[in-house]
Image (cartoon, rainbow, N blue to C red; front, side, top):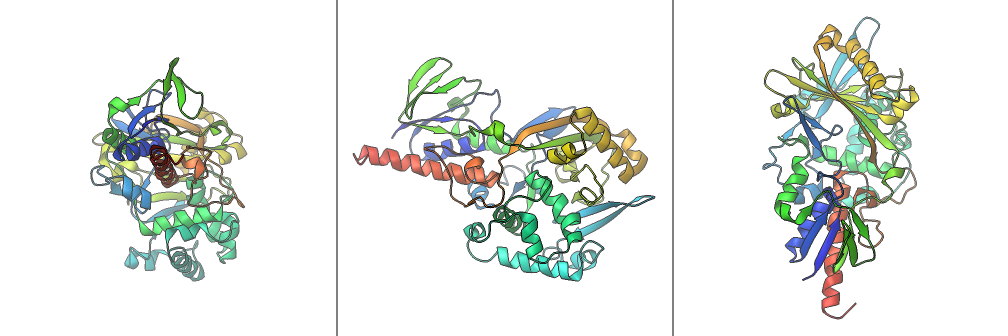
Length: 418
């Protein structure tokens, strides 16, 4: 078989490399940074596991199910549904909105609150049925409007959109307008209804590490300065090398991607939540709040915090921070802590700040009227979520498609067809 260089040791590059290796090719992976995994990174600090940005893995993603062994990852799931918080004059009010399809008894009694009318709940059921019909690729057919317009077309009340869909999906899509293409929304909503949101025991970095172990660390070359000359030659740290094929597993336009996110991590004496749900800020749009959502990863995976402690992770969409004129870590953290104090009172005084992360180029832009499909849009052998859609699934689908294309190209060349 052929010799192949994969440039980029993110999730897509590692998946592409493992597939090509499994097909009998000699694969080498070159990465310019000192760590593999791309955006799926986990730091260790004072016994806490801090993911770079709030990450979850979706067990419903088809390519993820083909790629990862969730049992080996020790994955544990969030409870389906969410806790909703609203700031009142004297104190915050919390509601638990259980998933009526998976927790029917809880769902019947929790769903009828001030955010979801009986008609809204009926429309959720109808939308759930609609997006789950047929092959998953059908979610990428039909309209290409933005998410807010799509939800309004389906008849949801503005209150339901602003207080439930907005804080949840603005935190997923990392934008403050729900301007993301409705095809992406339909896909993610379907996957959320079919699978679970899980965290690996050793943090999200365990996912790319599982692929690296499969490939072999001896084939991954970090801290590499790479210059690609043409389709079959490149230089690594100044040394020119020849391959049968080169795969570009990175986004050449990464610096143009504007969807960014702040994540603030705290170490707390105990969890502020009473269940294993994510907490959504219903005020983030209507009352100029800052926090989109809050999670306690150590409630799901005790390994995320040392014994007797809890890890609290807060997500702030970059566009929302800009709208409030907040541009640096200190201003972000101060506003976040004030908001948390309004919700949880004096207990937040004992929360230790662990880190304020700013992921500047977190997701590719997938706005309305983009011909978003389940097929990779690439230039030659180029993979990454930017060629499909911004998600773990997009990265993996792109890797699979490019690996197949490279293998077929080399097979044709062996048989004199190219």
